[in-house]
Image (cartoon, rainbow, N blue to C red; front, side, top):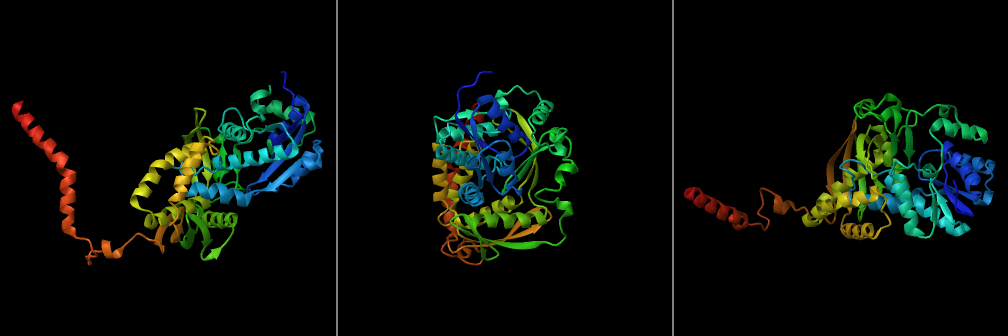
Length: 415
C-alpha cells in the first residue's frame, strides 16, 4: 500500500503490545520519526516502563512525552461534564468518552511543539474512539494528517500481530500469547471491560471480569454490612471537599473511588449504542463518579429553580450524546456548556450521603442559597401562601378540558 509522505508523527502510546506494534509499523511503513505521548489519567499503572520501551524501539529521548494530566482531566473535563448530571442512554457515566478529547488536545500540543505533521492512535475501525480522537484532532489542527493503523494495515487477526511482534523483537507478555479474555480501558473516572467473554449479553459478567485483581470496585455482595455516611461540599457545581477536607480535583475523585470501591458502588453491566451503528456490551466500574453524580443531583434539588432544573434535564441527553460521539470541541457542546455553567452559580452547599452495599442514598442537604422554604411548604404554617389562590390556577388549567367535554357532550347527542 502506498503511503503519503510523513516526516514526524505523534503517537498516543501506552507501552502495551498494540501500541508497541503500531510504533514499529509506523517506522517501517511511513519511514518517519515517531514521537510517543503517554498520558497519566489515573489509570493506576506504572507509566515509566513506556519510556524504556520507546527508547528500545528507537525513539529519541527528547521525543518521549509522559505527562501527568490527572488534575486537568478531572478539573477541566470530568467536573464540567458532571455539572450537567450527564448520563448516556440513562446509565453510562462516559468514563472512556470524556478522556479522549484531552488526550487528543495534548497530542496536538506536542505536535505543534516538535513540528510534527501527523498524529496517530490505536483505536480500531469498529469503535467510537476513532471518531473521538480524530474529530478532536481536526478541530484543534485542521491540516493535521491522521494515521489510523487499524484501518490501514493488512494484519488479519491477533496471530498475525503476534508474529509481527516476534519478528521485530517486541516484548509480548505471557498473557498476550493467546487472545486476552477481555479488553480494559482505565482512567481515574472509571474502567471499562469489553469484548470476547463479554460479547454475549445474555450471560452474566464472569467472575474473571467482575472479580479480577485490578478491578476498580468490589461487588455489592462483598461489601461490608456496615453503612458509611459521607459529606460532599460543592461550590458553583463542583466538588471542593469531602467530610470537610478540601483537596485538589483529582484527589477528590480518588477519595470518592476509595469510598465507592469499599461499598461495592458503581459496577454496571451495560449494552450501549455505538456511534458507528452497532450495539456493544461492556462492564463498567465508576465508583467515585456514581457517588459524585448522586451528590451533585442532591445539591441541585434545593438550589436550582424548577424551570432551570427541568431545562437542564431536557438538554442533558443531547449534551451526553455529543460527548459520547466525540464532539467535545464543537460549537454546540460549548454552547450547552455555557448554559449549564450559568445554572451552577448558586449550586453551593453540603450533601450527606449514605453508602451501603452498592447503593447511594441522600440523607441530608443544606445550602446558603437554598430555595427550599419550610415556612411556605410546611403544613402548620401559612407562610404567605394563600391556599385559596389555587382554585383559580386549577380552573384556568382545566378550562380547555371543560370546553372539550361540553363539545363532546353535544356531539354525542347529535350522533
